[in-house]
Length: 231
Image 1 (cartoon, one colour):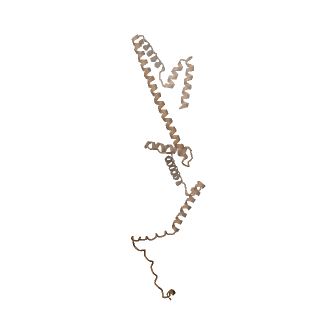
Image 2 (image 1 turned 90 degrees about the vertical axis):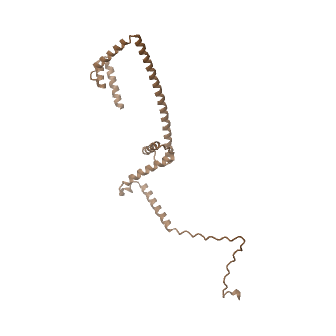
Image 3 (image 1 turned 90 degrees about the horizontal axis):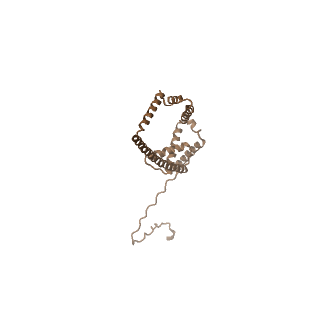
């Protein structure tokens, strides 16, 4: 679009440069740029309208009424332009405040999670923020970071599921080593739970004695015929 605009501006400058010495350049410009089939008729009609307007404006009443209408139209145009500028300024201020809020939200979210601050992460973050705003939600940085991390992990897992098994372990040695450590830790935890001794039985509850009761005497051991203390 920029190149097309520059080319059109260059053509206009060329026509303006040759217009003083070649009036036919105007007809060529109208034909090529605006598709006017007969520029001569168009210019003749415009000239006729100008002459009629000048003749009509010779009447003082018509001239005064036309001038009043022109001033009213100019005042209305300026008022609309002022209102448009005010609305545009207010809108731009709101956009700037929102951009600052979103920028700070993304910065705080990235500080709470171990994710690269690249275009892919920011694109996912922007998508989630847009979805939450449409739903009327306002996520804090920690919640947004957690949602982004879940989305990244699910996307990566979806890609890994499509990799052939013989190539899966060769994708990333560090990731492979992490998976192996996790599997070993899970196996060891299951073995430890399986070999753990059973829990000791709970001691039997003791019956409290009634108030005023004598303490129970220890059980007397039956005298043995071999008890030498009786001899």
